[in-house]
Amino acid sequence: MKKEDKSTIINQLETTINSYAHFYLADIAGLNAAETSELRRVCYKQDIKLLVVKNTLLRKALDNTDVDFSEIYSSLKGATSVLLSNTGNAPAKLIKDFSKSSKSKKPILKAAYVEQSIYVGENQLDALITVKSKNELIGELIGLLQSPAKNVISALQSGGTTIHGVLKTLSER
Image (tube, rainbow, N blue to C red; front, side, top):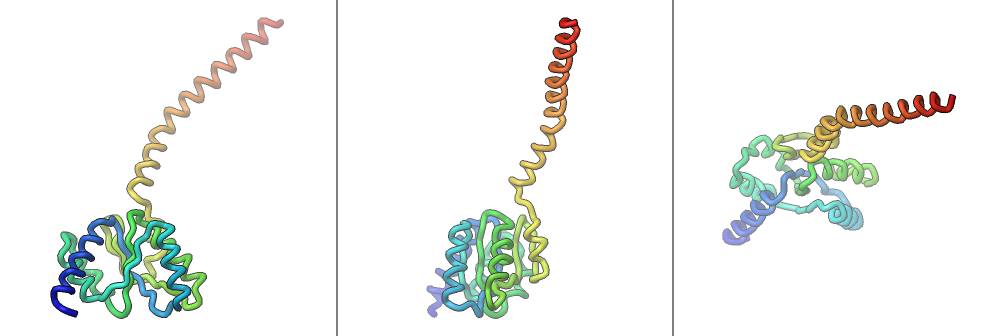
C-alpha cells in the first residue's frame, strides 16, 4: 500500500472516530461469512458502525486525536474490528448477545472508550453493559427531582377528595 493511501485511510479513520462518542475494539476473527454478515446486519439495525482495520493504521489515527489512547495500544494485536456508536452501552450489549449465539463465541471485547473512560479486557464487558449514558443519567436526575413535587401534588389532590367525601357524608346525615 502506498504512503498516500495509508495517510488517506488514517485521516478517514480519524474523522470517523471523532464523529462518534464511543468506540469498542473487538476480535471477530473466526466468524464465518454468514455470521459476519449477520453481525453487520445487527450493527446496522442498532446504529453501530462496524469497521475492520489494520492495527497500525488505527494506532496512527488514534495518535492524531486529542485524547491519550496509550492504554488501548496493548490491545491492538491480531485481528481488530472497531464498533462505533453514540450510545455507550449498545456495542457491549451487542457483543454479549452475539457471542452467546455464535458458535465461535466471538466477537470478543479487546478494549473500549466509553464516556471519556478507557476499558481494557474482556472482563470489562459486564461493567460496560451497565454504564449509563449522559442522557439516561440526566433523565434519572430529572425524575428524582420531580418525585417530591409529584408526591405533594398527589397528597393535595387526594386530600381534597377525602375532605369532600367527609363533607358529603356529614351533609347526608
